Image 1 (spheres, rainbow, N blue to C red):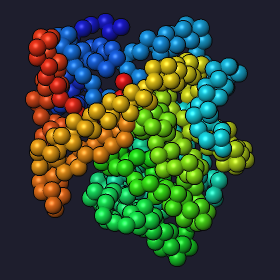
Image 2 (image 1 turned 60 degrees about the vertical axis):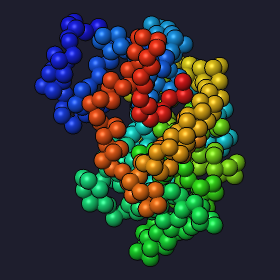
Image 3 (image 1 turned 30 degrees about the vertical axis):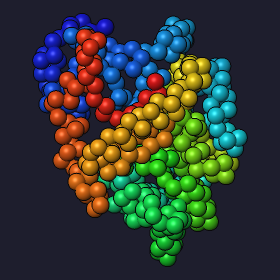
Image 4 (image 1 turned 90 degrees about the vertical axis):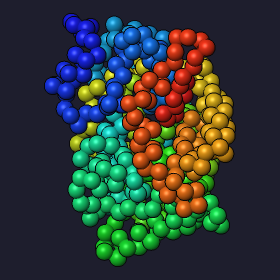
Length: 418
């Protein structure tokens, strides 16, 4: 517990003094000071209640009592690193394995999605003995140096593209190269991957992996056409590479229909590596990499031990198990399906009324609305979108008035299952 309680102005002043300026706040013109949360609601220092449609880690609701209890009970008993033999890590790995295809049966536990993707990169390069990585345009896979290098969203504003990184068009059927009127956009976009592979191989380089979010999020809530991943995987495997499915934003039932977003592509698609984070621990620092025994064995063959000080700890695994149990017990996948369908319907009603809404798309509670200046040309409404997410009026519009006759809400994005 903090030794002093500050008012909002004091907190903001101290933050500006001691916290790096690149660590940004939501609603920078008028930040909200949040002091507690429960379920889908957050509360400020004046006890104003906010509907949280921003958070992408409180997957089963803020401070869920089952998750809090699991962490508290285990923390009061034992918390140490995963190099001691303990039941929680094997219980958790077994439970996670039941949500995945049988072949993905080996797990590495880490602290964050960035660590998970960095490890996936190492696994792929070690297994294939190749270096080059193929990524989607606008992709974001983490903030470590290794991941900035494979994240066009980041590296394009920071440094030149590495010669071992190759960017392919994002499979966007609304604004991309091949749109909804194309007879086979999955094949067309996959052929772009094949073309890049051909260029790489002509330079005597070799592909280690294709990295993709199962549903690209930072890139604009993109829904890849069904069959795209299968066709890409065929090209990547033929080139000697692996397919890495990044589920850090979209896993754990967020899409409702399936537990993992890559499963939307069909039963015949199987990634070689799956990374997960954010919702996995409901805000607790936990992440994971799942892969095949063959890939894990090749990594172990280096003779270099892999360990993570906090990943896979008894407390982290207890919390991870509790999250899985809540998702199942409270039917949060069903909730994501029902609430997502309801919200999509409401957004489509708004689209019919307002020409600025060019496209509404989504699955479960992975939903996006694209703003345009012109529906025919699909010109991005950049200024309007920026106003919507940063205006100092938004913080107040998010608040739900204590007067039951006044319900002032502003939906900023859909991230949580509950």
